Length: 328
Ligand SMILES: *Cc1c(COP(=O)(O)O)cnc(C)c1O
Image (cartoon, rainbow, N blue to C red; front, side):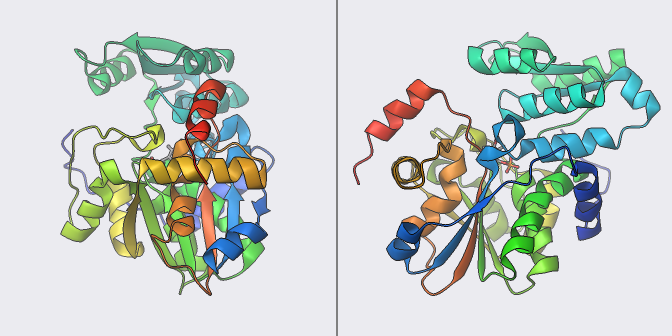
């Protein structure tokens, strides 16, 4: 995609508006603490648990916020997106709640469970061959033919503003923090949370965390421009993106202090930690921020640290497989 139009970055005001729209629709998810995690790291950690959000991930916030802003013509035609992951379910559920149609373009080899969940929320699923067809071209064609509004998974101001409400809620509960750790795929969550941090805890260091195999965000921040990489091989399927979005990068380069990486092995250990010590299921991508703290990638000793846990959607058999590999 070429971008000729100037990118309009959302502001903290957009996050406040999003929070108003989400009232009564999104869950205000719990902020949990763990004495064991504090003892292991020497810091005071606050986990914002979006694995308990509706449909199991923070993606509901951005999708719902974007759809809530539709005018009558947009509502009549419905919403369209391409995603094989949590954004698909977020759009399908948000559209259902808004009483509008949704069409989701998914790869023909997407996990059956995800296709099923999306259909159960009332989404029309159109499949494509991910090796021979271009999903963005299909999206553009369908949106022209049907007049549906395309809401992409991260590169959109309303999506960023919606995701930022997660950190807004966290700071409202904890007060100012020293460090905020946020997982990074395309950068919707990180950009939104960074805006919230700047407004509510100006001295807080905001750090993005990516899988080691896909450090395009880290390269981009260091280079000052968006770097593209090949599809990374990692168990963090929510972060298997080739580059951050343009709207996202605009916010990230101004408001994010650093981007670090963690290994798949560290993610597995962190999943096991959450299951054993905190009795919760977190998907691999959801463990990125916590893994950076628990494995000392970011030094949190003596600091008050917010950690975004982004989601909990993982096949039980895959969860069991992964956790049984952990040795701690
Ligand atoms: C989408 C997703 C991410 C990455 O979010 P971005 O906004 O693309 O950076 C992280 N974790 C989970 C569970 C996700 O679904």
